[in-house]
Length: 185
Image (spheres, rainbow, N blue to C red):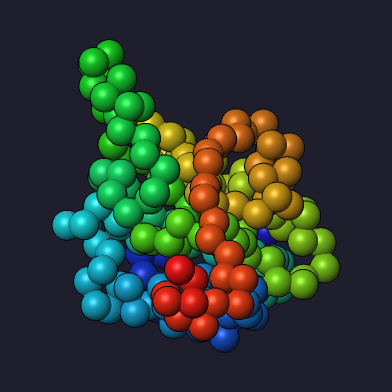
């Protein structure tokens, strides 16, 4: 039976274990990046990004899934612009904050958020992590749980868990071989 734990510092999870599950082509999810954000006060309660990282271990104690997770007290640095939801909650006499967010802080780049590496049973581990995140959100009494800029595979896992898809629009620029700005012009 997998066990989910939450961590108020990324350093509570060994870097080599976390990075074994992280996509090596996604630097914003590496342990070093997240640790630097914490050590240099880029995240923290005063900025509205309180670390609440998720770690799922199997019965042997091996880390099989993880997610960068934050208890959020505002919507700054998410790039999803949910201020209207916060306003609607306020007008209805409810609190929108805190909310729970699975994301790479200040990083509007699509990439893995449910870290499973190439472990056997990835889908089952992802499902257990999603269920666990939902239970953590319930236990904390937050207004909502958000998974930001997930991959298509992760979006499918989230929808399979009966979570609602976030619809958004992103604009991407492609460098078609421009060497510099003058070349682009």
